Image (cartoon, rainbow, N blue to C red; front, side, top):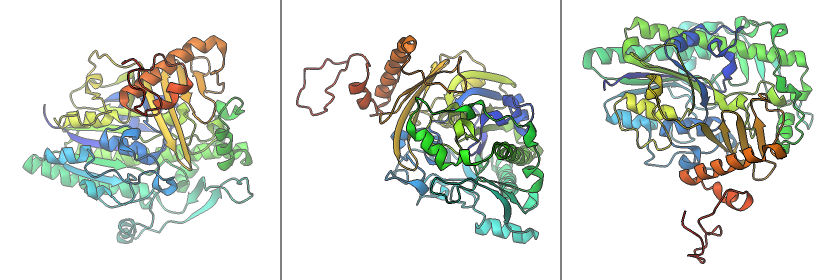
Length: 498
């Protein structure tokens, strides 16, 4: 197989319903719509976990979060590991050993002490979870071009339960578009593309280039054009703003208070969504510049292009913002687009895939053995339009953010089961209740569904080696148990071997 160049476009905290190619008729996203029209759009693409660092670590390694063990963002770390272990497999090292140049422009957020450079990525060092507007490279970029520095006004925030100002959600940015961090990232990526194109032409050296945006993660900080691009009066609030939290884990209502949703007037909530859409359009325009450069350099016929996000964002859905210990579609289902030269354009796949599956796909494109990416599946047969036997569900996990909070989720084509060991479990009928407002876990008519999904989740966790299943062994009807749940080794022989 010819070793492809690879361009990986990744956004942060990006709702799937903010793209034209995913059905939003109001928003302007021509670059990503064109990418979808010339590649494969995945309609059931999920994050392995809806939090930045663990999801990004899964992409880097091809490991599920419970396996790579980088389980929380370091800014809110609650005692978990803060860097991947020495010797951990990564696709970056595998590509480098195969002769690839590897570059990364933008958000890293995969550890405290180890930077992207420690994994062999070329590019500016840009640590943190939000636009690092004090980065020396960004400040030099502004100075070289005579552009004004970062400055904001018109801040939007709610009120915390203790009466103090809430988290900053959005603000007006007093910079022209060419001075924004988003424009800067595109410029740096274009510079690297030109360098890599020369190496490909002169020496035949293939490349991987990641362009990872910090947005549209909140706070949404935009210049006037994008801050005011969409009319809030035309914005429909998510149906799940009707959320009552009845029959739901109490942590969700606490998170709602933390994110101050009920202290913000509904017209301001509409404005926040309008600003968020403006942020998406601004990023799309920058991605368009990069994709146009790919065409200009003659690389499009030799370069596979991916687009996805690390996870979604609530933007008021379920009276929440950001993400957290609530495994709703708003933050777990994301966009996923893959374009590979020579493979059919304009395809739509409805198979369940995850961001982690991109790892094995990257390795396959580089003609490198994908087996070390142990929790990842090669998507190229789906992109090629070949008939493939594929699982009919997806498993996701969560380990906490502000505090430890273990969750596991199984989602099939109609139902979703969420196991919350310290609270009530959840079961949603996504056909009858697409907004996930009604927890039907205790409903007797769904007892067969609950039992089937609980057993399926249990067997999948056992197969993976995810020790979360030990809780399920003792607490739920999961079928025959083939080991001593005490794990003492003192009662050998009394349990059947499964």
